[in-house]
Length: 194
Image (cartoon, rainbow, N blue to C red; front, top):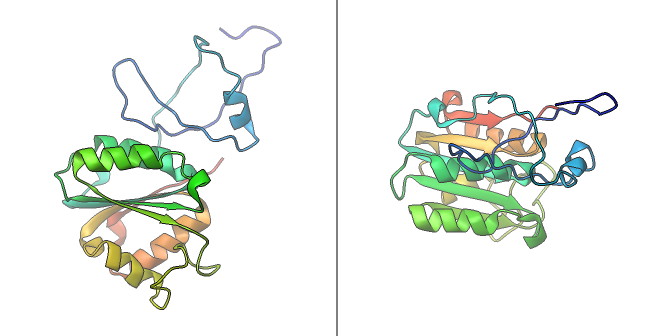
């Protein structure tokens, strides 16, 4: 119940775990906007949820193989997909792009899910090799991003790709995927516009 004098706040968030009959899990980083207020909510506080919205679901899947690619704020929905996606061991690769270990809030959970489900996990840590690259500097810097991606995920052109992260990251990944031959209808990106 909202009473006079209270503020009504709305903000989109993505699930960070597969929903159950009585639980929805959100992982929210403090970005200084309404996200900072999330830390003040006490257990038992009633909230109003609406949705789901968007098309970032397994329902879009057309291929047996799947590549899940996350960076920053994109890790929670990728974690939820990794946990719930219907797949056999070896069918899924997860790429988690981080600047450093402090930037890897869900790395341990993704590692546990990958190990339990038989998925491949690539945690790519470090500064970008160039301003237009989404990959970190490394031993294979002489290769363009699309070739570095194919080196890690050889079936990328015959996989459904789910990308979630900052807009510039997502655009750079999409460019690599197009060059690597992944059809547009197999690329599914979560758009954060708020």
